Image 1 (tube, helix red, strand yellow):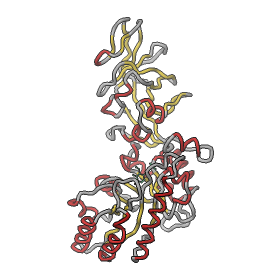
Image 2 (image 1 turned 120 degrees about the horizontal axis):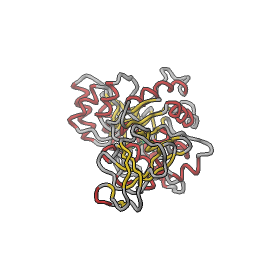
Image 3 (image 1 turned 180 degrees about the vertical axis):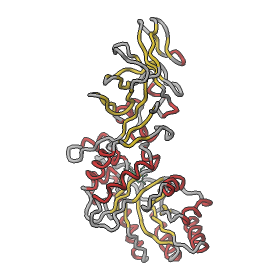
Length: 384
Ligand SMILES: Cc1ncc(COP(=O)(O)O)c(C=O)c1O
């Protein structure tokens, strides 16, 4: 029994995985993006679940393996400790002093500058190992990446680093494919193709070329190349409302996550009394409230103060007063029979009602990604 917990529906994960991979051409490899605690769904449990049905997509590949994309060496080490053997690509920054762990554990790493290449080469020589890298090419998002004007020199440096450093992949990331009206991705694709051509001229031929995350996977087959990176859509959420409008008839995703807590206390508040810190809510008449043990520490944003609802007994009830660190209050005046221990749904379905990550996101002017990734990782995740 938990006070607050997250349920992740394995059937929905499988549905999303298969619905998305159906769009990929034969032989296109899949990388499940499981960074940020698998977008809040629980990294270790999610990878084990996905690993279980990867073979349904890779029926012809031997072995049937899905890649996992993480942000940090810490996440990569968590995966390794869990015992999985799948290849792991670290997409984010690895401090130089930690590259030794990359080499030691055979993690694949995003490479985008010469000092990092030199250090990886030195370590690989010293440790008598090979290191597999995926070169990140800058095409217009302007975060990590080799600038277009540096691609030739970079390719020559890569050649000098062989055979210790093996360029297994080359990739880029789109800036605004979440907006289906934008054509900017075309410029980025062209820049990527130009860079790959330069690589080829210099004799650098990565096995995996990848540009598509969820939005491009759903919208642009020309961006699929030989690998696709499945993030938000794998968890059953669309990358944006605009992409949802465009594709949801063909690809019906199922949100996999339900976030639950319980009623801690039920009480009657006399008219005129205020609720919570800063006294931002005043009872206009006698009212009944439920206290629930959830707050901004849990990842329930303080922006939901007097601005949102949760589900109790299959009904929407408003949040009243400010969200505290570990507690918030609900107006349950219209409900009967609510008692301590009753289940409360913060995100997901209860009876006929549903609160989506998109609804929560729009209440606080953010995106669905932030809603689920901010759920405190210490809250238990249960695969159902
Ligand atoms: C490099 C990279 N690839 C793929 C993804 C997955 O993107 P999405 O969740 O939109 O599928 C991300 C997410 O931030 C990313 O940074």
